[in-house]
Length: 269
Image (tube, rainbow, N blue to C red):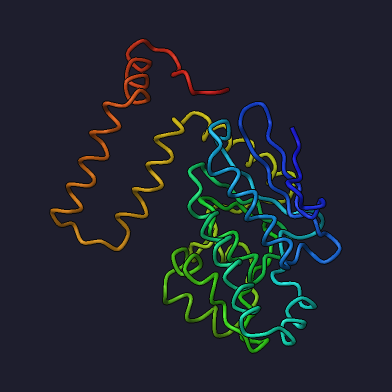
């Protein structure tokens, strides 16, 4: 099934029979740069996916030579003629789009090649997993344009930590996939786009072995325990989380399948 969700093909959206949704940025002539239409199109897609029970994995890609070069420079230049209210509305749309991606209940996987700059780096940082080709290039270039990486900062800082963010936000230097992996921005480096596709298939296969509800609750678990001291409130939350999962239909099916030496009902080959 293919659905453009009114994006006029600037974003391609496909869901296969396994429940794997593939979202492809499709402005290859300008390296998949963002503008208001792209941001609102992605927002509509995240809103649709957030309530779908038939989708288990979301894959994010870029068409052409790059994942995303960040903000469309012509679009940002025109923002100088916008009112303060219009500018704030536009930037809030970007902030909401990233949060909706970050909060999706499904597992999300970004497959990165070519340029992954500024807002593109933010988009990748909001995904659960990122794999990139060795030739991929990253940068947080905003200060060189007199801007700041503001809306993407919660996700980038969560990925690379404040110390690395203070360097790369300020220098705006380009860095390769190996350095991106070293600082935690991405999880794996592969040789080329063929290997990227292959590794994507492998990771999707792993994700389809996990229970959808358990994946959703595991994502919530990470967000709730990050940066927290282990106090009574946190212990109560974590204890309740696993207690609920044990008693859930998924938990009972998973345990029964283990003892019966069979795959649970949600597992797909």
